[in-house]
Structure formats: structure tokens, C-alpha cells
Image 1 (cartoon, rainbow, N blue to C red):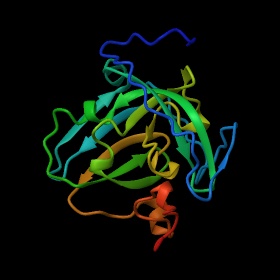
Image 2 (cartoon, one colour):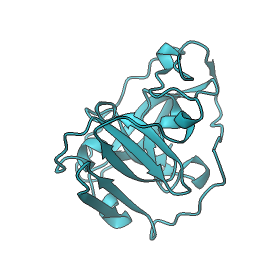
Image 3 (tube, rainbow, N blue to C red):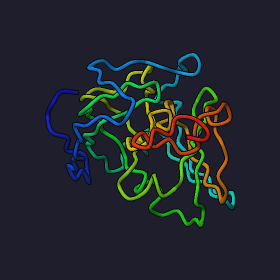
Image 4 (cartoon, rainbow, N blue to C red):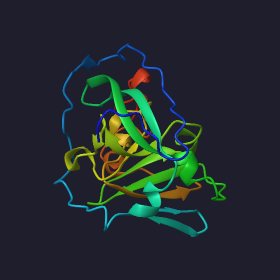
Length: 202
């Protein structure tokens, strides 16, 4: 994929403002560090499936081809890792969570994101809606590389990046909040970089 402007159906050309400011305790990097809780799973687009399971057990699933046929957006945003690096002005392409949840009825207030490889992380549903989160499949004009979560990862740039689950395979909608992988090991249940919510009690 080159730098030609994206023309997928429904592409709205949304651009998020980049702050140009560092949250407390962060340093700026030009690299894109690779940090993972385990080995990189091998997930081909042909085998990839993304599902949303509601609090009543109803399930909606998309194959890779069905997912890629959905309207996509280009996202320009800063990202912040709990290990203290931040990267300004990153460029992604993805499908908005608003699009994926558009026809799903739910009264849930929380979600658990699940990944191929067994990783999980919790995010309030309100933090995934309203143009705040995407399932991203491209970075900097290229297909998302496996070490960065390819073929697709959750992108929630206003929270620390451990919430942007790599190799994402689905969301479970929940009435009550529950900890995911890192949250069970002492990371903060929310993870706001501007409030420096790194660990339980922050």
C-alpha cells in the first residue's frame, strides 16, 4: 500500500488532532518499540475472525473479507505506552468500533477484548464508542505487521497502549467490569496516561 489517499467505501477522512504534548512521566520516541506479553501468534487473514458477544450471549462475527468490506477510516493520533514511551502523529487505518457495534443491542457498560494467543484487557464500553476506538489493520500506509498486532489490533489511543490489544479476535460485552491479563497482575483497571494510571491505586 502506498501513500495514495484511502478510498474505501464510507471513508470519511477523519483526522484526529495530535496533541504534541507528553503525558506525565513519558518520553518521546521516533521508533515503534515492540512489547508483548508472550510470543507473536501466527494469524493469517484467512483464519482470522472477529466476534462481538453481548451480555446475553448473542454473537455477531465477521470473517476477514467481511471485515475489510466495512467502511474504514484513517486515524492520525499520538500513542502512549505504560513503559513510558510515547510516539506522536502515528497513522493508522481501521474500522471504527461504532461501525462494528452499530446493529448490536446491548445494555453493557464494559468490554473485555480477547486476542489470539490468550491476551485480554478490559475497557469501558464508553471508551470504545463515539469515534474513540478502532480495529486497525494498517499502520503508516502498510498492512499491520505481526509484531505490532497484525493482521488486526484494537486501537484505543486515549488510554495506555496495553489496552490496544494486539491480534484481537473479539469483544465480550459485560454488565460489570472485570480485570484482563495485565490488570490481574497489578496494572490499573482504566489506564489514563494523562492521570498516570499505571498500576492499581494510581
